[in-house]
Image (cartoon, rainbow, N blue to C red; front, side):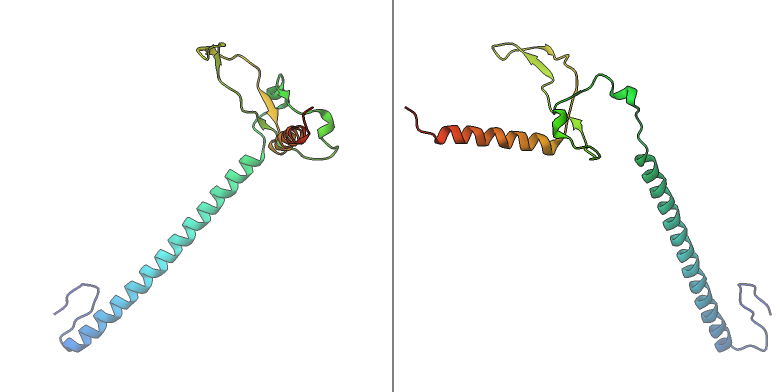
Amino acid sequence: MKLDLGLKITDSGSVSDWVKQSREKEKETKKNDSKRQAELLLQRQNEEEEEFLTQLQSRSKPSYTASDLKGLKIMHDHKDFEAGQDVILTLADTNILETDEYGKVVGIQETDDTLENVNIADADRKLEREKIMKRNRQPIY
């Protein structure tokens, strides 16, 4: 008698032989499944790594040109920058809504965008606060 379930059962075989064969077959399938899962995991990691690298490369290339920066104002004086120094400029915070002298919103401001360096702006504010504190400590006559 022969059954084809992936195991060979013959007339001369005993039940214990069949159990051994089924256990060996089960171990073999588990081993193959774990190999397959490891291969899939490795493939996913490689795909994610390639995707990350392409995103990183696309970020490093500026998506704007000098013509895009035309008309933008820079808040700082040219003396604040040193030759050969890289400085990151961001859009300065401004009010979007225009208000009148009573605080009522009258429209949207149509001012030009201004670029600033956060560190230089913080240093300027700190100097202004120090000047005010120094004036306040002086005696009033």
